[in-house]
Amino acid sequence: MQKGIFTVLLTCASALALSGCGESQPPAPPPPAVGVVTVTTQSVPLVNELPGRVAALETAEVRPQISGVIRRSLFPQGGYVRAGQVLFEVEDAPYRAALAQAQGALARAQAAIGSTSLQAQRYKDLVGINAVSRQEYDNAVASAQQARADVAAQRGAVQAAQVNLGFTRIRAPISGRIGRSLFTAGALVQTGQADPLATIQRLDSVYVDVTQSAAEIIDLKQAMKKGGVSEADGARIQLMLPNGTVYPIEGRLQFSEVTVDPDTGAVTLRATFPNPDGLLLPGMYVRARLVEGRRNSAILAPQQGISRDARGRATAMVVGKGNKAELRQVEVDRAVGDKWIVTSGLKPGDKLIVEGLVNLQPGAVVRPGAPQQITAQQQGGKPRAGQQIQGEAN
Image (cartoon, helix red, strand yellow):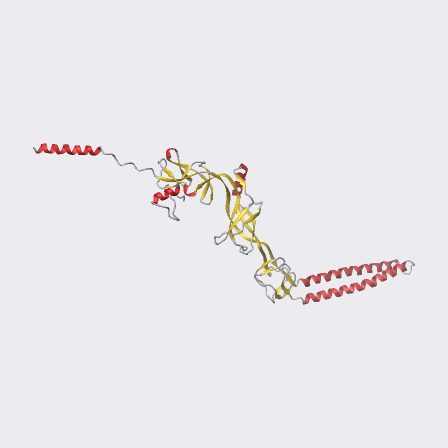
C-alpha cells in the first residue's frame, strides 16, 4: 500500500517537472547601445604650436664717444626717449678749450696765407725782369701753397674739436624705452668701454623668434607637393602668453632662416607683432600658433573615438556589416581642437564609435545611435555638464 502511494507521488512530481519545462525562457538582453559619428571630409587649417622668444625690433646701447666725467643724466629711467634726445652731459671744459685752441691755429694759418700769397705774386713780376732768381720765386710759391694747406688742416682740427664738444652731450640713437642707468653723475666714462651707459629698445612692434623642427618643414613641403595640403592665406601667427592667455593681435611671419641649427636640428622663424600696450617684453617666453597651410579633404575623428592598444598604435572601433563592432588600426597626424586628423584607417561614411566603448569587443552586435542620446540612456537622463565620455583615448 505504501509502495503504491510513493509511486503515485513520484509520477505527479515528474508531471509537474515536465509541465515546467514547457514554459517560455526569459528573452535575451538587447545589443549594447553605442554612440556613433559618421566620418566626413573637410578642409582644415594646419596649426602648429611652437616655442618662441620675444625680441625688440631695435636695440641700441648708449656708449660714450669721448672720455670724461658725467656731469648729470637727463632722462627718466624706464621711460620713453626720442631719437636725438640728450641723455647725459659730460664735463665739456676741456673740449671747449681744445676748440678755442683749434680756432686760434686756424686764424694764424689764415693770416699766414695772405702774406705768402702776396710775396709769391711780387716774385712773379720780379722774376720776369731777372730781379730775383727763379729759385726764390719757386720758394715763394711753395710757401703760399703750404699756407693754404695749413688753413685746410686747421679747419679740419676745428671741425674735430666741434664734434668732440658735441659728443659731450650724449644723445639717444633711436626712439624707444630706455632701461636703467648704469652710470651716475661723477662717474668717469671712456671711449670704447665695455659697459654701456644705458640700453634703448624699440617696443612699439616686436620680433618673435620661434623654432621648428626641420623634419616638420620637410613633411609640410612634401604634402604641399603631393597636393594634399595647400598654402595658407597669409602666414598668420597667434601668441600664447606665459599666463596662458591669448595675445589679442595676430602677427605676420617675416622670414625663415636658410640654415638648420646643427645642435637642435631646428630652423628659426621670425615674426613681427604690433605691441601698442607694451605687453610683450624682450626675452619673454611665448608659444606661437602658426597656420602653416590647409589640408584638403581631411578626415577628422573625435578624440574620444581614438584609443591606443598595448603597443601604442592608434585604433578605432567602427560599426561594420550587421551592426557588428569592427576594430581598425589608424594613423593620426595632429590634433585640431577636440579631433584628430586621420591619415589612414578611416574613410568617409564610416560610423565611428565614440561612446559605449567600455568592455566592447570586436565582432559584438551593437545598437548605434547619436552620442548624446546614448549617454542619456546610460545615465537614465540628460548628461551632466563636464562628464567624461566613455572610451576616451589616453
